Picture 1 (cartoon, one colour):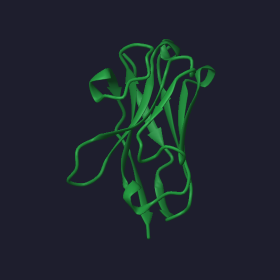
Picture 2 (picture 1 turned 90 degrees about the vertical axis):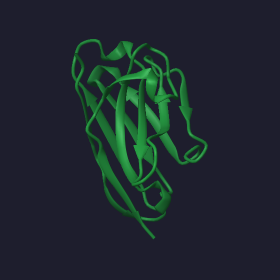
Picture 3 (picture 1 turned 90 degrees about the horizontal axis):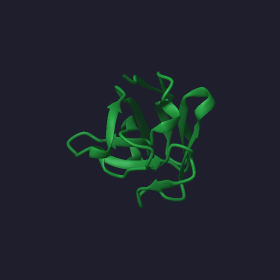
Length: 124
């Protein structure tokens, strides 16, 4: 069993930056792809970014490409999401997820372990 816990959310002005972190328990962290999703009120959960087990492959949603960066440190069982040039439309609850395989997935079905989420609010 893998437990995933997010941290780092908060309130920021448009144009600002936040860094989300996600720690995962378990000695098998390094074999799983990891991802970030987000869900705004009244909307479906959407893919934000994904990274393969060794970090060699990353994917981003078009809406965040060039502004967000996903990275991981397998020695620390941690994956991070650096968010720059934030926009009000980035406001959402952000979820970290652990994959079923080592591949960087872009669909929620590709992830098995989910955190409780952390709120990110971007004011205009």
